[in-house]
Image (cartoon, rainbow, N blue to C red):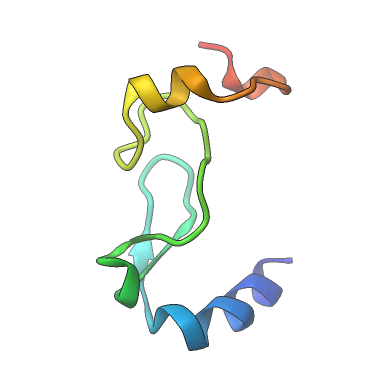
Length: 65
């Protein structure tokens, strides 16, 4: 699945520039070195505010603190 998304996003988002230190999702050149797919919803994400995460519909256990 990871290879599928890398191929699909590369034309639109440019080169992969790294990954998030919390959830390991890829960051992309044309997204200002940020992930192109949001939200991850994992606590401590440097790309999402706590206020934003509080608005997410929590449907799986890994959202729990």
